[in-house]
Image 1 (spheres, rainbow, N blue to C red):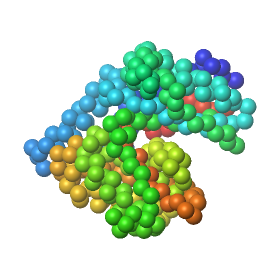
Image 2: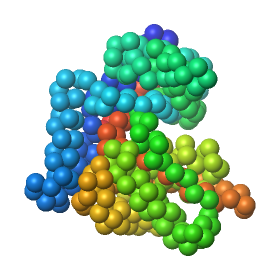
Image 3: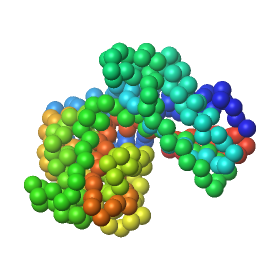
Image 4: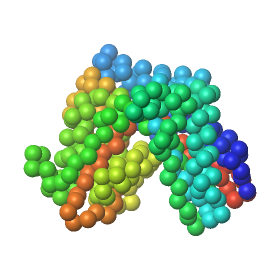
Amino acid sequence: MMGLSAWTELLVEVIAAATARLPDDVTAAIRDGRKREAEGSLAAMALDAILKNAELACSEKAPMCQDTGVPLFWIHHPAGVSTGLLVRACVEAVRRATAEKLLRENAVDTLTGRNTGTGQAPGIPSVHCEEWDRPETKIELLLKGGGCENTSAQYSLPDSKLGADRNLEGARRVVLDAVYQAQGRGCGPGILGVCLGGDRSSGYLEAKYQLMRRLDDKNPVAELDALERRLVEESNQLGIGPMGFGGKTTVLGAKVGTLGRVPASYFVSIAYLCWAARRATAIVGANGDVTWPS
């Protein structure tokens, strides 16, 4: 049975993996986008700089962005593993990672405006634990930067201004509007995590959890898979491009999930993620062995 110190040590490793290493599927998507951009264009130069930055961050084991964001942990664990222990380990890991410069001193007291100096504050990190009927523990981490968080959006359907009804076509319209309104802010090309349904809080959280998916996966729901592919195609036809410089690479991917809703509400929540998709996953087996899925 792992104690607080062992869990903390592992979680610091998860943070280190997320902050310095761009996932291979995201790197591949950026390279594919680079092939589509005209040589000498601002879009091409922006994507070249992004790829060089990611390469340096990985080789130097340094944060790939100065805004290391809010750490969001999702932990699925078997019965017998203490949720309270895991939460304490996440908090301690963020403090340690901040002290070791893996994370920036990125937490501010909202009332005083003062930086806490530890990277930790009420609600930071954001930790979500759930028991499951498996012997292993799965740790998933997303580092969500403030710039891209500012370009996230939530719509309540129907939206008469956009002609968006309470259906998948309405959802498509509002997601594309969110991309258009972003205009490259939030360090595009971006990745879209989308939730249809839920309430205002659960919808955003599910939208962020969608960002843990690989860009090259396939949604098991046929209608949502088609919507994801269409959102990517049509977003990239808007001409916004990397960082808003124009071009054909406005988004790298779109991932859509659903939650139940009450009859009175139909929310579409869009969690916009910058190109620096800092995510990492570790699985701790019943024997304590750790594996690192890509």
